[in-house]
Length: 172
Figure 1 (cartoon, rainbow, N blue to C red):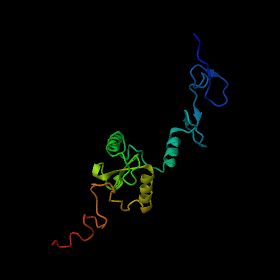
Figure 2 (tube, rainbow, N blue to C red):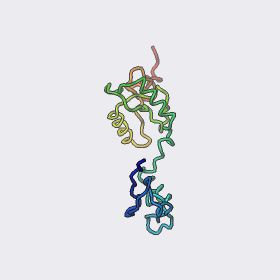
Figure 3 (cartoon, rainbow, N blue to C red):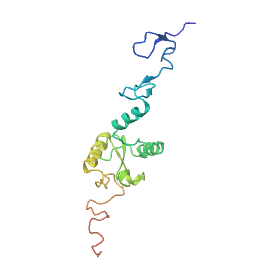
């Protein structure tokens, strides 16, 4: 029975061949010094010790928590999948929806309730997200959905259905 072709060791500059790929016998248990100067720790794989690797990832992500820590784990993926199945078209342009948007963002108290969700294509979701980021961290979100039949606040503002002075105006 023919054997598989041997593969080169994954350590740079090593001429040895391995049966399955990866490191050769000489390098299998080797530890490498961290690339950060003056760091006494060792790395196993990426050239950075675990502390510097974590710091590098945090810097790259701007310190932003993972999607799961922000509440977008397995449960959200199930809600999103079901919502897109029921609402396949973008609320803005009727193109196929690829994103589920929170009308009131979760960070501002929005929930995963279907009345707070709207289907959007990637272009419209990106545009809405950019508008919200431009307003700043505490800015008011777009509280109105363009989706017919959605629960929302009327364009008059004021935080109540009916506009700013709805509660002050006597009914006739």
